[in-house]
Image 1 (cartoon, rainbow, N blue to C red):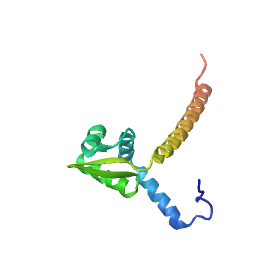
Image 2 (spheres, rainbow, N blue to C red; image 1 turned 45 degrees about the vertical axis):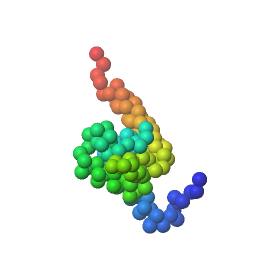
Image 3 (cartoon, rainbow, N blue to C red; image 1 turned 120 degrees about the vertical axis):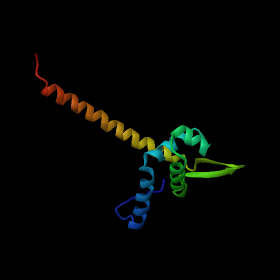
Image 4 (tube, one colour; image 1 turned 90 degrees about the horizontal axis):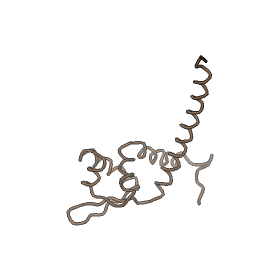
Length: 121
């Protein structure tokens, strides 16, 4: 794998990375990606699965498409959306695993704190 993220990475490249993460920083967009994990869906199916309104969904689909995260495939009167690069799920799983580990560590610390501060009877 090509390593492009280093202390010498240009600010222009870093700005693109930041923009990519901004696209992923919206809960609704992550919901959409989660829905598309099982395969292509049209707008109506995504609306039903996420509970997002049509206008809101369209806005998020546009952002995800422009970022190259999903692609759109017209089929008759419908447009189907699908994941353009399945590696997005590797990234999401990496982040979820990291958050899970942090939460488990905090829970252990809280248990220790509670045990320390709870008076014995």
